[in-house]
Every structure is written in structure tokens, then in C-alpha cells.
Image 1 (tube, rainbow, N blue to C red):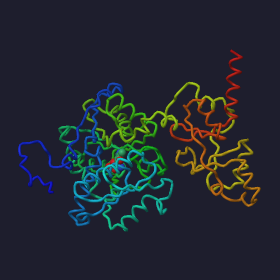
Image 2 (cartoon, rainbow, N blue to C red):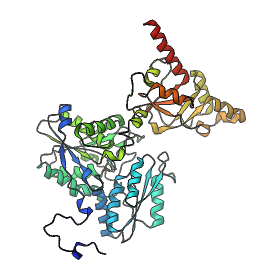
Image 3 (cartoon, rainbow, N blue to C red):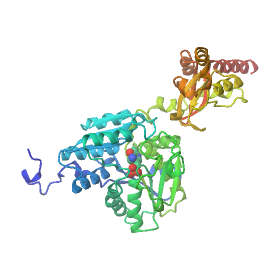
Image 4 (tube, helix red, strand yellow):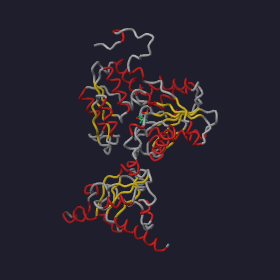
Length: 474
Ligand code: PMP
């Protein structure tokens, strides 16, 4: 059966659009009045609310543009397959357009992505392949390698959003003109997170072509290369990179503001509660940067912040108190894990660790010098990201291993290390630490999403001792 409107009765005079594809774009611009009041912002701060796209994110726009271009060039043939590594939003956009136009979709993503995003793509009929985040890009298991292999095996079209020029073009053609029209040409600042850089570059190109004085400001997760980081991991999804995508055009950018995971997540919660606009972590990151920009702006300025998607995709993380507390983003009580660490001997370094390539002999000497019986194994140097913890070494286990084979002394710790220590947030209850220490010899304490210290039974006992002493003294 044909769904072409030509085959049915005339719809002239009705407001029925032809398909869901026609609902992509034309998203609203909404003033952030409550946040402006709370923050003492005098200029107009408005949000480009991309959630009203049919797939719930800004990525519907480049998804459509990339598919139309591939159809036009013949890269995508009727009934063909689309393969793309994507953190979710681009996948939804592609899946929607593919459903309408009769293509199959296979999406490849890392295990860092929130589980509900995976289910969402499956709901549109797509196939999802999940790969480990903790491997190098050239590892055959990496999501880049898997996507490459599947593209070849299936003879599929790979939109390649990181390199596809039609990604920024979508925003040159649609988002930019919408913003110009919606602000009556009065927009002075545009603030957005950058992932593939499609949004910031596309909008930046258009707005600068209309008025070169419009300021284009990128918000970037701390650690990402756009703000000068080395590409070390962070928790905010969908933004920041460890490489420079094709659409990265720094000459368009007037400023790049680095925002921590903690500030991004807290701002997402703050905006959701204060404005009644449920936003995700990358939206929170963009708003955190936009608040800083708006505070410096003149009263007549119009600062627009780009909100790519909804907080609904992050309910089990940013909006889940247990998850937030476990990463040390929330303080649940006064007398919490942080208080135990505070009573500890200040001469002991807060976080003792070994690198994966250090020798077992070095780990043992560090444990002996510092009187500790386990060490986390972490890549790089502090401050570490939670994802840079790869395991732990334990005195007892090392002793047994060396007993079996004395050669173990001169092997790298990564060859003999055990699993990671269980984690607890710096703001979680001491009772939880006690419960967890019944089965684990030590816990890794996280603060602001980063490893802060290792907590053991001795630490908790010392803390109770100090509390009892204080009670006697008072
Ligand atoms: N936020 C989220 C949640 C995203 O999925 C993306 C796209 N990866 C972005 C922000 C960044 O947009 P862009 O890729 O256009 O730079």
C-alpha cells in the first residue's frame, strides 16, 4: 500500500504534515527567566530547545541531511543498510528517517552509554552492537573498528557523522536561519557543546555570515581536546572528543569554556527543577557555560544556549540520587565517608596508586613504605577519571603469586592485578561503607566523579575512635 498523499484524498487546507520527517527542525526558542532571576542575569538568556524534534534531539537534523545526500549521490540505494557508531541521538534520527524511507539500521556504541538509550534505538527497529569503552581505537573490539568491519561486511552506507560535511550543513541550512529569524537578527551570543562539531560549526558559519560580530562559544567537558585537554575520559555523554572531527573550525569560535562533570550534572538538575525544562548532561554543560557568558553580557544582548536533548535519556544516571552519590556528586549526610577521610593521618597521601606498567616490586615497596595493603591501578597521573582505574593490587594476593613464581616481582602490575575496588561516594553514609567492607578489603572513594582515596576497615575504626574521644572531651 502506498503512503503517498497523492494516492489518498486531498489534504489541502488541513494541518496534517506528510510524515514525521516534516516535523524535523523549527524548534522553539524559550527564555530562561527563572535561571536569569536566580543568577542575576540582565541580558536575555534563551534556550534553543531541540527536544521538540521527533527523535527528541538536535541530531534529527544532520541525520536527515546525511541520508538525503547519500540518496542523491547513490551511496544509499533503496532497501539499503545504514551502519553508524553513535552515542544514541544520531542513531535515533537515522532510525526515524530510515523507518520512513525503508532502510535497515545497525548502530555501534560503547558501554559508557546509558542503557535506556540502547533500548530506545531497538524500539525503532534498529540493531545495536555494544563495545567496551576502555580499549584503544585501533583495537578490533573498539566501536570504530567494529563499525568499520560491519560496514564492509554488510555493504552498508556509513554516514560517518564525524567526517560528513552534510552534518554541519544541516545546521547551516536550518538551525542557523531559525535562530536568526527567531531573534529578529538580534542574537549576540550562541553557546553550544561540541561533539562532532556539526551544531556549533554549522550555526556558527551561518550566524557569522549574517553578522560577523555574533560571538560563538563552545562549551567543552574538562579533559576533551577542544578546550586543550588530552582526551582523557569524563562522564558527560555526547560532547567533547579525544580527536578533532572534520567539522572542527576553531576560527569560528570566540571562546571555549571547559566545564566539569560535576558542574554539568548539577546544572542539568538545576535547570530541570528551576525552569521545568528537563535537560541532559551536555545541555547542563552548555547552560553552565551560557550562564557565565550571560553574566558578562550587556543588558541588550541576546544569549542563546543550544540544548541538544532531554533529561529523559539520563534518568538512571544524572537524575538518580544513588548513582550521583556513588560518584561523589551528592552529599547524603553530615557524618559521611568524607568525615572518615578527614580524621585520617594527614601525613598519608590521599591517593596512593600504581600505573599498570609499573613493576610488582615497585607496588610492594610502595605498600611497605606507606603501610597499606592494597593499591588501585590507575592509568596516567592524578587527577584520575573513574574510567582510568583499571584494577587493584592486594598484598595477600601478591604474596601468594610471588610464592608460586618469584619471577612475578619483575612483571608489570597489570599482568597480575585483581578487579577494581568497589566504589563509594565521598558524600555517602558511613553505614554503607561498613556494609560494603564486610565483603571487600577496601573501597575506592570517589569525589566529583574522580578517585579521591582508598578507605579501609582500619580507617573506619580510627574514625569511631576519634568520635568517641571527642565525645569524652566535650
Ligand atoms: N549533546 C548530545 C547529547 C549529543 O548526542 C551530541 C551529538 N554527539 C551533542 C551534544 C553535540 O552535537 P554535535 O555533534 O553537533 O557537536
